[in-house]
Length: 192
Image 1 (cartoon, rainbow, N blue to C red):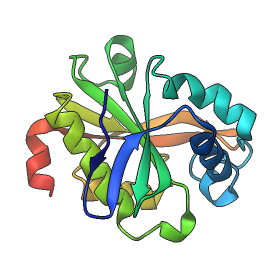
Image 2: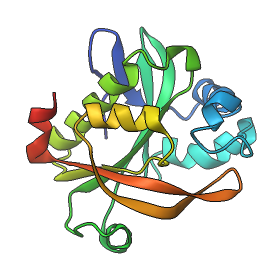
Image 3: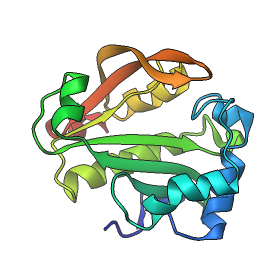
Image 4: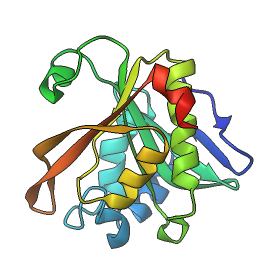
């Protein structure tokens, strides 16, 4: 299980806790229309009960994905998760079905901290953790194709576009195209 770690002087990643403090933060973030526009959808706000139901099992370590909090200057400001992608899930995406493939999702829950480089630093730290500690061979991420801010962040971390996934994600009542982006272990060192 992941131990908390500092990515840079101001940015750290820790596991999400099975407690009201983390659940209240998540419900606050996932009730903000500015956040929901890019993560979950504005038609899908999460109150405290919904957050507990969805994220509680994850925070208790019950299966995939592993939930984490992005911490900036000692305060949680966002959410990250990683998960193993194997077998049929990888095959459906059209990627090699070898072991060692992980997926990542993330968001910064405080819009006033967007475009400050925090997400890029945190994502690079999580990618490094997955390659160095979990021995991942490849990491994937699949942002909605219209989310240009997220795509720029992922490209800065070394992710490359692999293919378009038409109609991949139901978001705000319609199926949206996503970009399948990936980075391989051997390419990560050159990205920073």
